[in-house]
Amino acid sequence: MQDQVSALTAIGVRAAYLNLAFTTEKATIAERAFERAELQLLYVAPERLLTGWFLELLARSRVGLFAIDEAYCMSQWGYDFRCK
Image 1 (cartoon, rainbow, N blue to C red):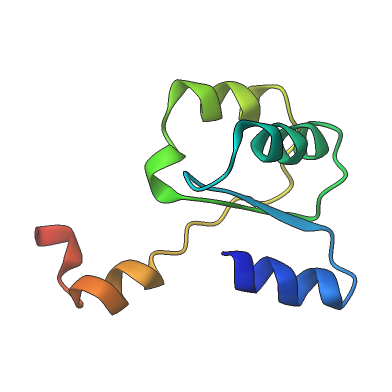
Image 2 (image 1 turned 120 degrees about the horizontal axis):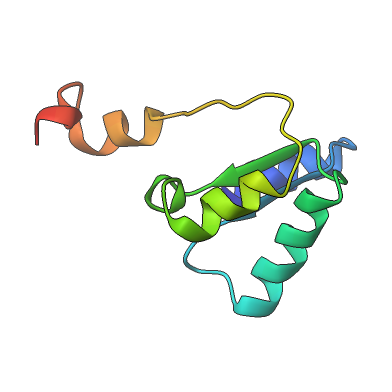
C-alpha cells in the first residue's frame, strides 16, 4: 500500500492508506482527511474492512466509489485463496 500511495501522490493524486502498521497518530490523520473528502483514494487493509471502527468511518464520510482488490491474496495463496 505504501508504495502505491507514494507513486500516486508523486503524480498529484490525493491518496492515503490505513493498515495495522500505522501509529494511532498517522491513522487519525488519514481518517480525518478521508472524512473531510480531502482524499481521492483511500487504501484499507482487508482485515479492517468490516470492523466497527471502519464501518463508522464510512458512515461519517462520503464515498464516491468502493472497490475491493484481492490481488495480493492470489499472489500469496494462489487462485483458490478463498478455499483456505
